[in-house]
Amino acid sequence: MTSSATEVGIMPPPPGVEPDFSGSRTSLQSRIIVVYVIMTVLSTVVLALRLHTRIFIRRTTGLDDVLVVLSWFGCVAWLVIGFEAFQYGFGQHLWNVTPAQLPDYMRMLVGIIVVYVWTPALAKLSLLALYYRLNPDRKIRTCIYALIALVSGYSLAITIVAAGPCNPLSHADQKCLTDLNLFMACINIITDFLILCLPIPMLRALQLPMKQKVLLGLVFALGSGVVVISTVRIIYVYSMISNPDSTYNVAKACIFSTVELNGGVICACIALLKPFIQAYMPWILSLSSKNGSGDRSRTRKFKMFGKRSNEKSYELGSAEADKGNNKLNRQIAVTRSYSVRDSNTGKSSGGSMDELFAPSAGWNGGR
Image (cartoon, rainbow, N blue to C red; front, side, top):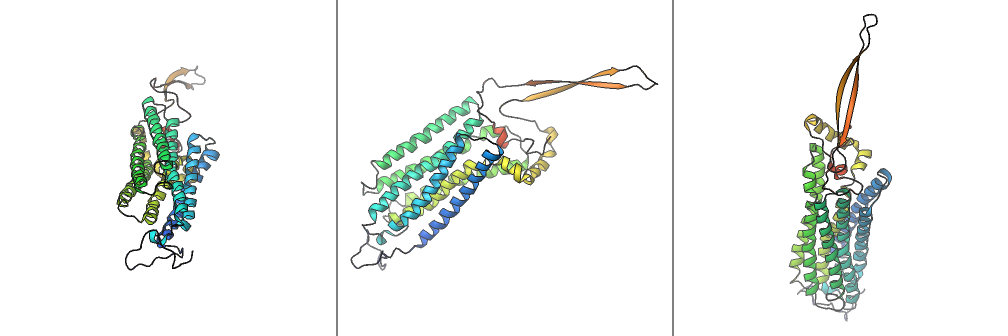
């Protein structure tokens, strides 16, 4: 777009500022490109590692894998829509955006809202599907059902509101969209926190060597980081209420959103990379084996779900007649095995949380 004396911006510029309709890239747009590309590449790499682990190492896939792939497609759509929206004023000050650009910008804004709603929702549903598959406990599964209903319900409700009462194409007032953004940010923080805390009761019973505790702590720290980013974003969105420069401020908020969306995909993938580490980076796990070997004899072996077998051995002496004054002593080992099951749990759906986090032959270097 070329500058013209007849062109005016949607809002007047501040005193001493000349409007620029050349369409040249702003510093904010440059930052958006850097953050969008880096975060999308990171989530793509981690997702590829997860899919490699599930398809070629574990040789099994589930609903949680499908959901996280759909969430990743949302991250890609977020990047494409953001870059496409540059030509319509996304990342420009409102006084550099013409009325002719506004309808297309609003259409892009609808796409941004829908993607922002469903991309984290699918990542959360993927984690919940994973927890459901691995955990047969009825109480935990009841919590999972409730969170699935909550995430699906508010995502659908926000989509309906954004397409109807708060549709920017038919409502010039941005207050509705700002309020909707605040609600989305709040509900995302709440559900992120609940899903982050959901596996804690399951993991408390597991006795892990220090190295594994550190690795597990990194997983939770990453999830906590997403919650922190969401909190920072809600503070920024709240500060936008009194600022009419929407095309610029929305773009700044979307930088935080990019980290939030791709971070959700990374969190949903990273917990399943243990078999990949065992196969290609066993030195990490050998360190945890050394840390845990000193007190292995004192550690209670615990497997949360599925079979727990105990073995007891008894020695029976036998003797044969002396031959040449050489007495042969032989022993017969009789082994009894039995299984203990919790009758209050439901049926597992093909795994256990023990496979992800607890000590195993792979983690501890074998028994």
